[in-house]
Image 1 (cartoon, rainbow, N blue to C red):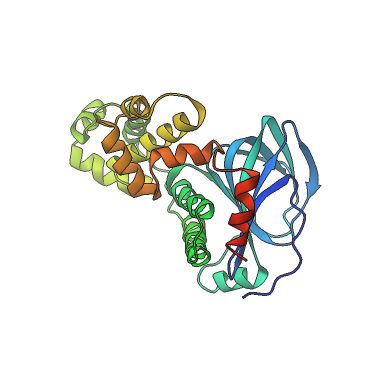
Image 2: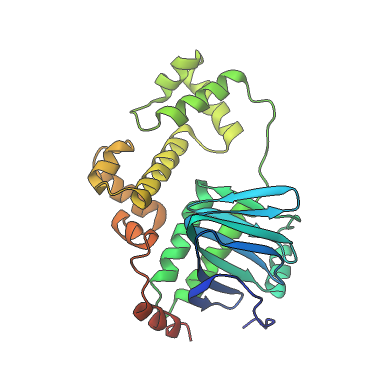
Length: 286
């Protein structure tokens, strides 16, 4: 077990906690319109937004947080926070200095906070939170592995290209606007007058994923938003987001997140959280 200093103050109300050999996880809820003055934390931490919206101010930089925003904040980073009219709920993963030094042996960590909306970090975050909510005797080990996967994903350097051709940017906008339709490489390539093979190659080179992966990601992100924010049935959501039926949606969602859409909807709406449920969850990590 890694030794650690006493926990620093996190504002908000604690719902549940868990510890692993290198990390401390805590789910916290924040009241509507809460304003938190400038402060800093002694340990670096990951933040995962589970519900609501808020912003953090780092000097002259403002970062916005919404459902499944994933962020990394170095220790000592001074910031203030402002919460929306609906408040917020978030999962924080504190990283002990010894663990951070161990991680740096494998990958340098640049200074300054970073944040991601959607994409692979969101899926790792969803799997992490699912394990956090459904603990068993192996959960501390599983949680540790998922935290390391999440850190690797958000800290991995990405090739940034400033020379994306105009036709590729237009193709990207077509994908973002029409991802729920039955798109094909041929259709997309036809809208920008390039060969499908050329589109596939350049899209992966500039955006770091295939066209199919991007479409699947966008469909999943829209489905997650609808499950959290609307009362539509899973069948309606599946069809509206471009899946052929609910079965296809369920299989794809489980493969990506490790849970069913029904389980996800219960978790993201906080239905698994109750005062009676919190203590047994905490006790299982004792």
